[in-house]
Image (cartoon, rainbow over all chains, first blue to last red; front, side, top):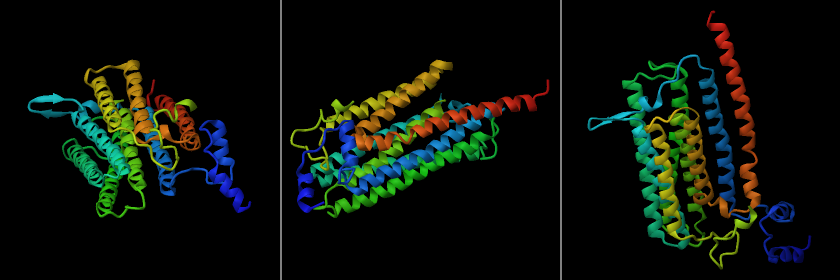
Length: 230
Length: 119
């Protein structure tokens, strides 16, 4: 193809976003996805991570379905007594609200980044990281309570089916690692934004970081529903 | 499906590689909605709803929350179909896997019943 043809392609209006548009995106002599490569790579990573978490949750479903013992009552296992009131599953509910709030602040950080408001971007990214860190802290508290007070182990527990501990530590542990990695990722990028590292390069990096963070929240939605509430 | 894609785009933001700027209020609304949905799913447990209704409500609130996060927070609503296909076609294999493992789990359970519980 000659250079003239290429320029003609580049100048051509973007195809409509229907099935024909998708065919033209894949079929034309150009890059398929009109986005920065980092964003596409993040999407592909998240797609692969979807499979990893799905396999964990499917494994959990399989052992829970085939278990002969009764499954421990999660709303009782994760209940807390606050000021004399016995509230079921309260810690997990607080953790859920914290993670959703952090997703909200992240979405706003992305928005401010594209508006070019560096100060607010750094502020909201730091807030997101702090909320994420408090989530991990609460998870550490939850694990300690379960291991020390309730005697839950990966190979057994006093409340019922032995598979409970194995799936609990595997699934929440892997999610907790994702949150921890996300907090570090957020702080590193926030620091670089604060130093003006992305001036002139564009702020797609904040959206890419945001995609990762929202995914961590997304996974928690499934864990909360399928592990804690089911 | 295809008509909704560029409805909310701010005029002038036509280039695909350029991000579309939505008002902050959109994110605050979605945030509030996610809070309400989370509270409702917590209420399912708090009021000890049991049986089929419990499972239906849990899955309903879960899907709504996941949908809001993916479409609005992760901006998938404003992405092109080419990317949506990449994101949503492969996970169909997961649906097949879930069905297979559900059948397998049920089979294991029934066999354990027959083997370990003497009549």
